[in-house]
Length: 234
Image (tube, rainbow, N blue to C red; front, top):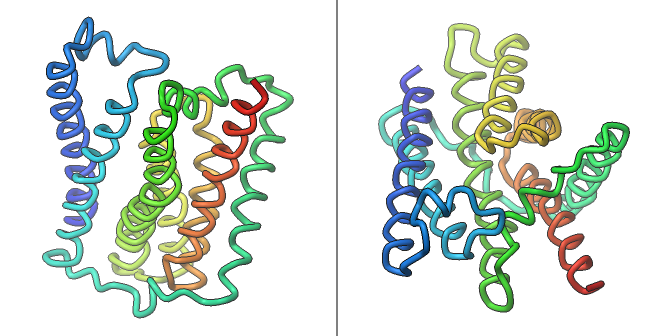
């Protein structure tokens, strides 16, 4: 339970740090309307999105640190070990993205690509490349470490029924829902929750974070490649 509380506080604290950083940047850049106008922008400046991510990751990092230093959560023995066979998880991530996109087609969602356009809309050249690195590499590492490496394991290993089937199922479902909720995207919630289930199952079965990270990277990569192709077409 202390780890879960620390996770909640870390996420909340990350949001606060993000707000402070973005507010300060908006003031320094004399952004018209300040933070209130910035929060309503459909394509906010690249620095706003970059600082928002950095602030959030600061909170997640603090929660991860607490879990391992004070929460008695031990790292998985080989959680960062790369294996040649991990390349197959690239296909898994691509497949998850394509299957989720296909599942949404009957509902004709108009806002399915809104998060990508919101994040990259005003970025070009080096700023676009910076955001690509942040969302394609850093975000999957931080999110997998936090949601699967800490929250999922705290739920599945921390109770009296640690590592029982019921505890693992609870950890998979709850961590997946928290993962989807954290993105604050109503339309994408179901797809993100499904992805969260897949990622948690990977960690439960492999006892490593790398398979989930590779899957997450390739999942995000499909959306970024689609955006690049769309921009090239224009």
